[in-house]
Image 1 (cartoon, rainbow, N blue to C red):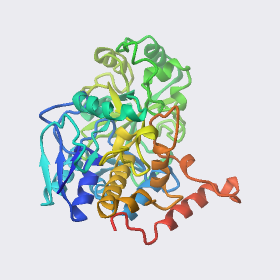
Image 2: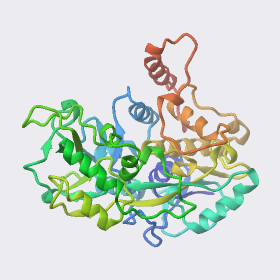
Image 3: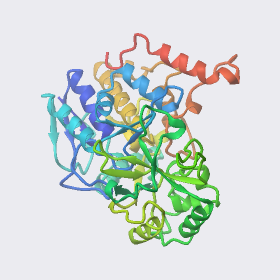
Image 4: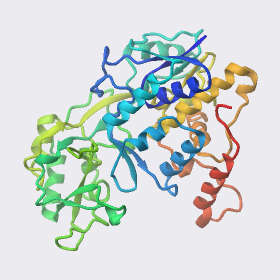
Length: 436
């Protein structure tokens, strides 16, 4: 018997590698490059499209603690991300191409994994499966999936996500830009900064507010994800919104003046060679011509060459609390779900749910009854995340992992809450083997 993993992204590859190393034979299905999506550019496994960052590393931050948990649990892809790391201060940013190559090598090195390059158009209810097709699930498979969950009261949900522009390093004006990490963290500067004075900032905001965006269809309006708003949407929420968001200048003094600029645009390297840079936090749905017109008005970017313009795409996800068991198993089936299709937003969360779904499927194959009662340790990041995904919620929306999801025990003072949550999480994993 072979296990079917549908989707060669982060969660699918993590799940396939976990299952293979636990002794199972796996068919890993990836439709690209035969069938492409609106956001992907290649047929590579684990291709990242929104950002090259897995976010922060410090365990005092939610994503840092989640990474520490993944490391303790034996994540297969997290070490590959570290191996493809590019400098980005206290964040885990990676060279996308190098990372994808390492994931492909890992998959190809397992004889138990068979990579199948074809579109899966319908689910097989009799096959043990991990569905990890992500937010850009093909239309035919999405229709089949949602026809199955409608009986459980689930409805098709979606929101609209944006990706940021990428520019070539050689086209930037390095007489204007300066290299610096916020608060000078790290051994060497990993970011380039474009300083703006008050007049330049307000001119930029005015241009965004008046900009020609890609008009949303009536059924699309109101579906933007709050954690990844387009810059023009932020500008319309108030003149200072960007300056307290992605253009925050605090901790980035210009070495030529010694003072913080009025606002700053940060650029982060896309690859190890630093030939491409991503405009940090500048996801947008502006028309491509409008993007170029507005962004090249900015000092330091006047001659910018765009390797990729920002874009917007629809993300599909399940009404998880209604249709998934706590194991992330689709009710009444042999199908487990992982990644963004569950409503778990973020790269580190994709690895987490891929590992979790593999663990739960592995347990079900040994003893289905026991597996339904199998719980990961309380107070841990992944348990808190999966409980959020499956706990009844009439207004369910995608979410990143955050400390607010972790339980708070009686007697913890507010000042010590985070410290105790971290301590509880770390101690809970002692002796736990997710694939044991």
